Length: 292
Image 1 (spheres, one colour):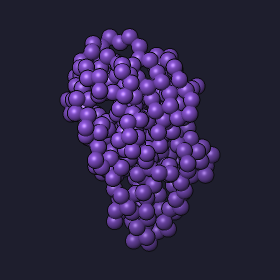
Image 2: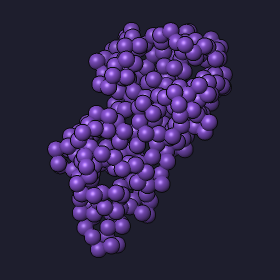
Image 3: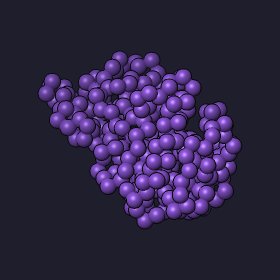
């Protein structure tokens, strides 16, 4: 684990870790309380419960029994600025809307894309964005510079990702898949393989089973952090930009306004940019400081 993640883990003290939930106490912060919420705005008085799918580093995952990652740091800082403790409810991403509606959590922070079908009906508060990248072996021995260089090669994807959907020419790459490009140029299409986790995909790349990984920019940055002497990244290989948001149910307007104030304060003092640039390649909302 990188040193800064170890430091963050030390600040998020686990209170409960059983089943699919974990509770964490927010710690003293130099940031003042920027907004408060009414008693009925949160499930447990004094605690902000956040739904997050703790399976996809670098945005969120569990290390030594403690939730860590960029989204986890942002969520914890939101709680501090609202004067609340924080608890994380480990929730499958597809089940997050139902969990919010049923009251299992107050907000959701788990790389949820604004405008995606899975967030329909939720109030989304922007806090960052992801591009798409290729991760290749260090030194880029095959001179891969973009999707067009993948013809005839083996490409690794993470199951369930936007990149897996885009690879055959759907989603953000509808009608312009690299496979279509290769075929129209008379070149062999790439062999595409999906892996259940980021770790399995990375192992495939470093072991030579894949020539490149097609991933989001945060995953690409995470691989550079962990395998900087073994992999390289080519950023912005498509025009796709996935804008991410904190999700709140429509009925909790007071909570939505408070979260927005917390994010605005994080934006203004550079904390939001700091979390993103430590955790992965991302854009932050307009006006965010890039100098922590």
